[in-house]
Length: 180
Image (cartoon, rainbow, N blue to C red; front, side):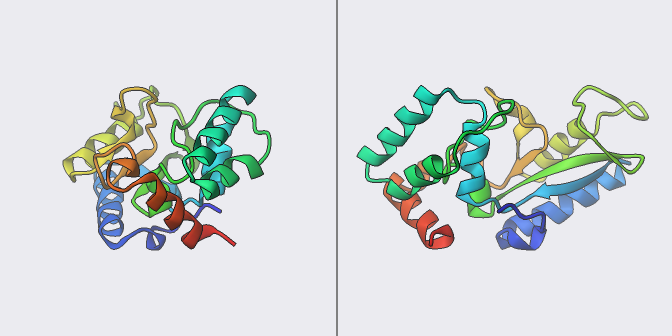
C-alpha cells in the first residue's frame, strides 16, 4: 500500500508538504504527491526490483539472524521484482514507512514529467522542488550522495530511522503498524 494523501503523513511533515507544494507553485512549478505513506511490503518491492537473488537472500538471512523477522518476511513475501534501482532502503529503513517522507511528480501541461534535466521556462521542476525543500528545512532526495531521488523530500536529515531507533524497534513498529 502506498498513499498519495498528505493527510497520511505525521503532522510536522503535513505542514511542510503543503508549504513545499505551495512554494513550488508560486515559482510556476506544479508538483503533485504520488507517494506519501508507504507500507514495508511496497518498500520491499522497490528495494528488490534492482537486486540479485544472492543479495536478497543475504539481506533476509541478516535480518533473520538479528531477530528482525517481520522485516525479513516483508522482503521474502513480495517475490521477484524487476526494474531500475529506485531505493537503497529496505523495509522500515525509509522515512516513508514512518509518515515523514513524500515523493512528488512534476506536472507539465497536465502530464507527469520525469526528466531531471528538461527545463520549462528556464527551470527544472525537480531542482526547484529540491531547493524549496531545503529552504523549508527538509532533506531533498535530489541531493542524496549515492542514489539521487529527485522526487523525494523528507522531514529528518538522517538517511535512515536506524540512527534514531534500534533494528528491534524498527521491526516491532513496522509489525505493529502494518502486520497481520
